[in-house]
Length: 329
Image 1 (cartoon, rainbow, N blue to C red):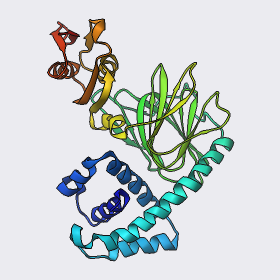
Image 2 (image 1 turned 90 degrees about the vertical axis):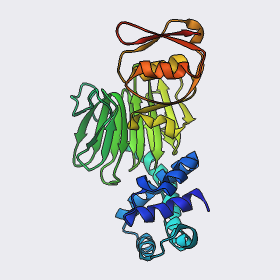
Image 3 (image 1 turned 135 degrees about the horizontal axis):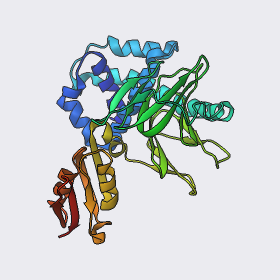
Image 4 (image 1 turned 120 degrees about the horizontal axis):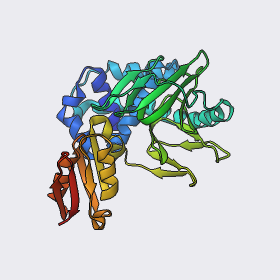
């Protein structure tokens, strides 16, 4: 049984009315490995496409899956998964071969920077945490706290600009109206996918979760096409990089958590402080590169520091402003 096969089975269960978030079997399967998480995200994206697709073969496969009445996972799931896995496979094949080329073509001919840098924000996330908004076409955007997004839709284009902060986009496929997301001097050209954009004073990062997209930059002659699980990093004066990313870690902010894997303490502190609360502060340079790991709730840097001190050789001293100072123990 492959991860994609299992994802197809769980899709059928969800559409039959099973609340997967409360099903211990699904929860255990999803948490078992990053490969399961990625398969589930891929299947969700393809399922959305199948739901609006007019291809009679895919439509027949979808109906066949729903017509099955077997109910137990271990004995009867294979006939269901067979048709769904085939549909997902066809969808994936078309998506990555045709979709990637379409994105390249779109990036080459579509005008960039459709939303001016001085545009007024349309959506703004407050200080209490991430907020989700519906875009005019039904696509969804989740903004991290303090983030701002401008929108400029027309009859031929769907364009947004991330003015500050971080945004997760779940874009509805519409071949007649390309979707672009500007951030700084960079433009993301999207074709109905899920992706994350983060903009700081130092750099821009674009993470592709599902589907296909490309990024045009001021210095690269050709659009950079990403595949799911890849992150583009762009910083002024430095070559653009494309690296593999841990999506669970990268997207944990949407659940008001941050996750670190062998991260330097200095960078972890900066990330935690970004979510508000009296800041934690390093007062001992010898601990700046101490490597830390773990998953922590946002909004309380002091609690974060104290949790680290339980595991790592750190000393935490409270300050009058409610923050803490961190040194080596």
